[in-house]
Length: 410
Image 1 (tube, rainbow, N blue to C red):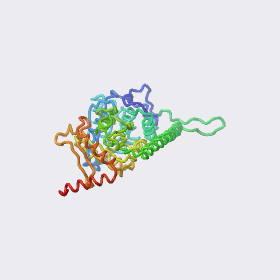
Image 2 (cartoon, rainbow, N blue to C red):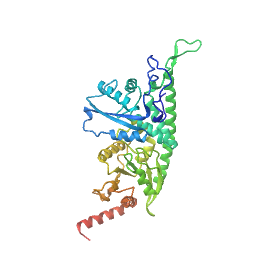
Image 3 (cartoon, rainbow, N blue to C red):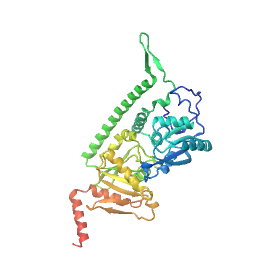
Image 4 (cartoon, one colour):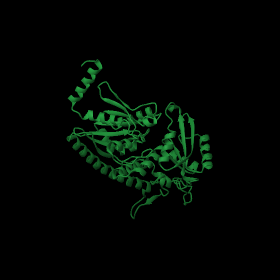
């Protein structure tokens, strides 16, 4: 099978001699440079004109994976080349930059087919991966809980199912036993069968986890506890806000996908306000579908919540595109119907904006501006949660009072 360890261990020089036969081109791949030095490649196609360039985001992903980005190459094409994704001229440019920078890894900011990966590795003589493989590797490094490790392994195996040929240099047919005619099962077919068994076992174990989570959610619903989930783009400050509100000690770092495992804590807001707050995995543009499917048991916590605190990095120029990307993932998992409170975070890095709140036409707090790092504006989130915990008639009374105040009546 393919390498399943961290990226730092990939691309090392192989000690096996290359073989010219078909099906053995992976064994012939020789890493030229350092495996922890990465060269990034991004192409803009005619069908993608006007979309946000995510090359800077890919650089942050590579840094989060423990890689050192040595150079970023960009180009334009009408459409991808079916064989190598790149054109002939750009391929020669990448070859020259690999020799100059001594990069042992090339990362494409696109989805590559298995054939394109193999052809690129043959032409560039180094390890080649795409954006999806990089995200999967980061998830594999960060998963700590048993559930998270199961989910990441399932996503890796489902992706590996289409790339089994990459890791094998012994695909000759096995001979049948005594009294049997013809060739037996190929090594590739054996690997696919074993992989299928493992995937089936992982899905069964994750189904048990999903049922356990569902039982816990039903118990909270019967107890009248308000279930709130933190969602948002990766590195928007969800875990920092979670620690501020609950006084927990969840891991925080200025890197993408610092948090993978869902953490749940009670939030005390008063005698009549019982809230359970959950910190979930962050989202990203072009999130691999294999990850969405594998993390469905975790994302159900978001779908069954009573309220979503949608945390947005207010200081990021791409905040509108990030907000749209998160809404897209929420729609994909069926959580788009859950009420949202949009939390614009990092006001300490946004000098043109002050902390505050905004109400919708129904008088409900719909947007707040805060700084989770300094704690400024957190009272607006607590105020919104307290109002949600109040009985319906109390909310109607407050709405009528605000309406009377706006009309100038007593």
